[in-house]
Figure 1: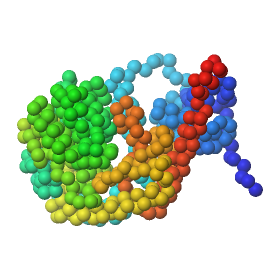
Figure 2 (figure 1 turned 60 degrees about the vertical axis):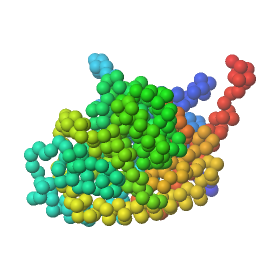
Figure 3 (figure 1 turned 30 degrees about the vertical axis):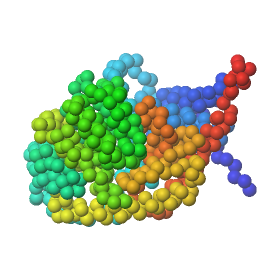
Figure 4 (figure 1 turned 45 degrees about the vertical axis):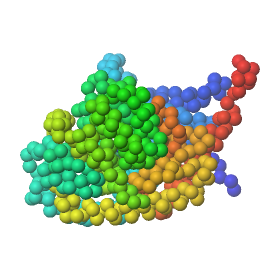
Length: 511
Ligand SMILES: Cc1ncc(COP(=O)(O)O)c(C=O)c1O
């Protein structure tokens, strides 16, 4: 016997007025009211888009549109495998069904508004396939890390103590200087190394130290949201010059045409984020020549280049001119992101300025993990670990490529060729909306990030970032199946929308 579709009760939504059109907006408004009245409680699970569409007798795309809107506004949150819920942040007013206080809250400053937007874009991604930087299974350095931690945290140099050096523990700076000289051709001494809580903080420090209020900065287009969001939220959105990227990396000539007097250029020269190509030697030389001629700084975000699978990692840009380049490295990819340790290698004349900015920001990095990491590097575990994870991630990567190629037809989705890093870009054909695929995928327990918002104006080509976390073959297989279904659903909705969109003629007739 055929199963009857499950219907759900959400009485507070009321009925939708079909004659008024815009059912997605009506539904979003009804849900907003239900949350504000307290009929829907913070944390409460909403029905799946499919079930709600069936009970309201609307297209599933209508429900997805309403959910997407409310997620963007912060009314709802969506987590893989956990479904869509009313946001917890709405708790105080809505929970008790209280009347909202008649005293108006103080208006948000422009800065607070911008940071609020950033908060919504940087929600924590669960460790589900294809989240980026998930070090599980054979890629996690658990045992050695735990042993070193036990040894150094109790009585060793990592034991609780007074304030430490804002530049970071000297022993760790020495170990890092040795490591980057050998592995990344970075030219530096320990005195030029500043320990950070990861590249994100390194980027923030660079913006604080290198740019005055009126200074403009070049940023790749597309780029990592972590840098564009800093420049937008610190009051420099129009001073951010988005420079196009092509197969050779940042197009320096285009940058010069757009704004030759920029004070800094932010580049991911070893492995362009998100597209994946290295910057060509010709472009590196052109970028350095521009920086020298204009007294500009180059910030090299070298977030994952240790993980190259088809040869040795590309040498750093910093090695070509240590006086012009601020080099940012991190242990997030080669060890694990929750460690929150990275480093900036800065020209000598900037060391004190970075030291000062670091003191004001958070005084210094936590002491204990700095010493555990020092021992990890000094005892040779880091080199061995990197050699091992290269193999693990190369294997994961091959598995994902094989599975995607088998499950998704190339005219629907295809992978961008690349030979390094912890993520790949899956391009989507036929105007398939990557944001909708990402939010639908989250409902099925699949974590992918949309590429189009990483372009200036948020409207670049449609694609998805797939991380090479250490997920099992079975998890990859299942997740790829779910992802394919989500892509097909959005593709179907897109082609239906295109077909049913009124032509100029029918629009005029019905007007
Ligand atoms: C291009 C790029 N830069 C910087 C970062 C931030 O890394 P961290 O964890 O060291 O702050 C990331 C993280 O994914 C990244 O992809």
